[in-house]
Length: 241
Image (tube, rainbow, N blue to C red; front, side):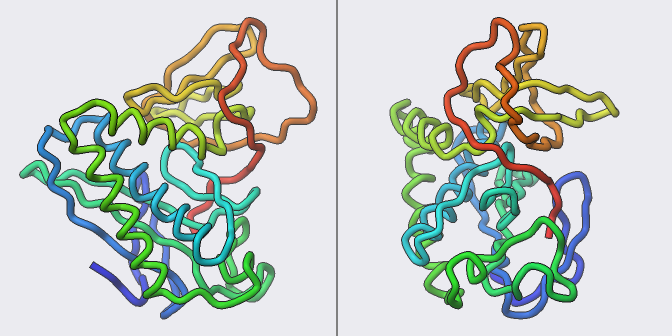
């Protein structure tokens, strides 16, 4: 399903947002994976769409985006896209994306703070149809790897997600469900899609769900006893444009 504008969009945790006509790619895809959609599968399906959009941006406008755990695409500190996966009662999964294509320059009236568009990054308009075609082609290839009964496909997708991560290696603050808070360094991404955060005292916490804020590095060392992160990338912010 493709929409031209969004007047009552819904993101994670029930957040609402809007998008003006023609400026944003607003797309939802219905997937019917053969396995019951547990948390690990939901993460992989989200990763399929995020990585496909990342590849489309690189191919069409030579913009390299980073994947912020669990479901955003960033350019430096600015959010370019958000993704949401929801399970249907019959086991199907709907994965949707809102990607800023042709918004005005940051600072213009009505432009959300902390957001960026591919046009603003590339310096030229981005065709929605070519971007959608590239995204769907990349999604089809990665989804085939997820549903392949051989484990190599999922392993390759996880490796790609780790390599594209803007969260791994970054100091983070995680706002946990129920009001808790975790501060540390994101050091690993589990095979089940959960994020491993090393606390300053060297202990580790495994995060299944939460809102992540990327903190600036500021030259601080890794927490005591923490493993070297798999990927680095300081970014900041979690606003849904």
